[in-house]
Image (tube, rainbow, N blue to C red; front, top):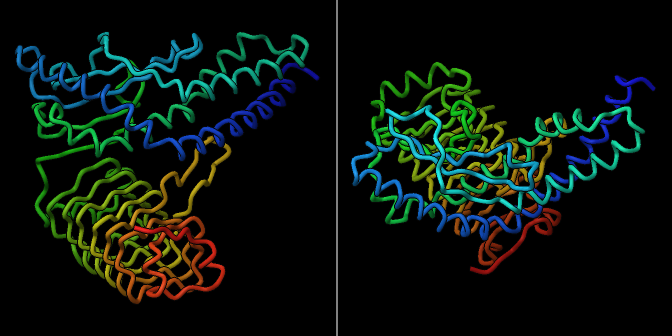
Length: 378
């Protein structure tokens, strides 16, 4: 076996080890995400207070970005360390050292286990694969583990934005919290965006009508009426829609990964065939909406990239789902507190979904659907 053949065989085995550890990390995060988010709150609270102090001393203008940045060089020194950074428009893109850090030991444990498995496998090749080649390659494979820090901060956001220190922080008209890597603002992933300069309903509808690829990712759209629109196939991944009227719109075959609909009117919206892993429709009006043949399950892995989809499931808590249709949908959803009179679940795969025991008499389900649902008390 020559070096090229050995390397190809080794990386195939190493990626299998990586995916095994990612599945274990995924399961751990699913169990512990609330605790992890709670642990982040005091760290961020202290940092928000620091940012407010900078503003009080006229050392910083209105804040436009809070960034939680991975220090990649620390990873293979045994630390999954993140530095907290704050920027106004004058300092955005600059690099500076902040003393505020967060140690994600819960992530590093799985990186370490994977690294050790790789090293053990490398030794079996009797010197054909040099350790420096493995070290370089491992550094390029960190992102699927780092993604769980993105998930953690996104999960903590609802707690963070209620903190008095966050409320006191003076923010620019466009503000975001993002998670990324130190020194590279372009590779950051936004976990919360707030835009106080919103388009008019007419301008917003014209913008969305264009259905431009990647244009709406991470955007904040609020207080507009874009009802009866044709948005079929649109990509609204990680978009936050707040108090938006979408009544009667067409969103068939759209992409709604982690999209967040807050207090939106989505009555009679057609989501047929859409992909909506981890989308949230809490407290929304979804009466007579169509979710037929949508995909929104849990724990689905893309093995090539080491990415898991469906961490939280689709969120329908408190939503109005009267006469909505989920025919032949594949969905793991939280239906607690939703209005379910006349909701059609014919042929739907509801494995992993949660419903209130009090709603058992309201929903018409097959025996297999009944058994696949987790029934809980209020």
